[in-house]
Length: 466
Image (cartoon, rainbow, N blue to C red; front, side, top):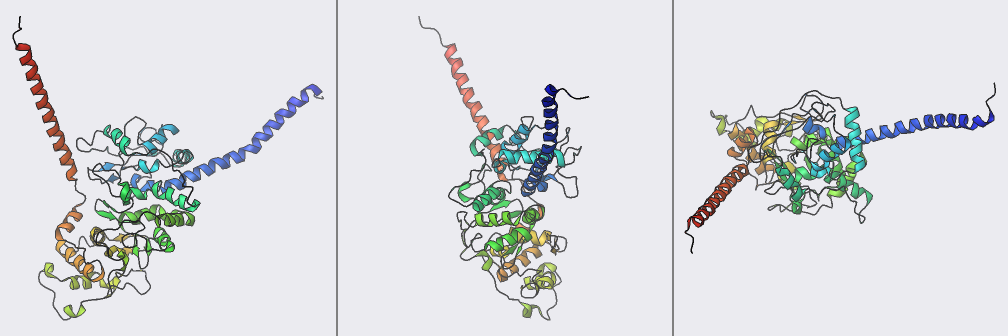
């Protein structure tokens, strides 16, 4: 039976539409896959795993206690669980949490979640992250403990005022006077990689001090060093290739090695970035306005020279009191096997030299103490921690020896410092200051109110003049 000619165009159009849809399907799937992969890369660059995954725990299920000067902030479950995570978040709600610090329930996040940096993400970046988290991350049906901060910091609504003061809520705007590579580096450093969050000092209200961007900041026990372009205090004396090697491998011979939170950032995030992105970061960092730390009269990586005090300990019996051991004796006992007698490191360079090493070249010695206590546990390098083997006095004595021989002579290691770092981050005096200020302010307000009320009553009791 022949189809009437009047119906052929409609039949043909239907077939054509089906064929066109089928042809478009692979490209649509490819676009979705590309978006998800973009989201995966951005999540890696943002190092989401560091704060949202407990070591050995479920991926992105939260529960990491993030130390801050006002107390520990617990990271949340960001898996697509509808009951415990972000499974019910719309794209708009996801964007608000990511770039404005506002949860789906309207509550404010604390900037320990670096939403001021993520505000630089574009709408396309946010959509890609949303696609990745909602389709590629497995839901985990658990809730981490809630954050409990001392009054008044536990009032999340106060973050609305903080945001008005300090949140610059707009995507990254490229600088037309700079190259595409420089702009990519600026976006990564200030945005998803949020280098500024850790390496920029903060003011009394815990906001980044923009006048000293990337000039170094305390991170609880560890210290995020100056990475401005200053030749002495920062990375101005590093080549681009050395910076790339450090970001990729955690090791730049003759300059420094990554430990603590930086080693974690490299292991989780930076070493997975493309060579082009790592080079872009290096190019940008070399242009950050230089900030020099007081006392840095030479590059921090140029301090020290090979030396030892072996003659002073040869043939000398160890003291009965271990706390009386000299720095040379402690170095010989705990360090010389790997770093050699004169601090020159292993012959193949695998174990770093202590001479011309930025880890010892700064006046701030917190990282040196933390390294002696906790060690270094990267995939390619293992340095044991000595917290169980050495007490506070011994660590301080060894630290002083290391600084005097291989580091910045202005840097000191004290017993009190070691004791405090071993104990862990302490709550900032700012908490007590704010609490006292609030009590005093409330008392003053009540006193003024009482005076005004007394005056009002006296006025009411005066006899009327006729």
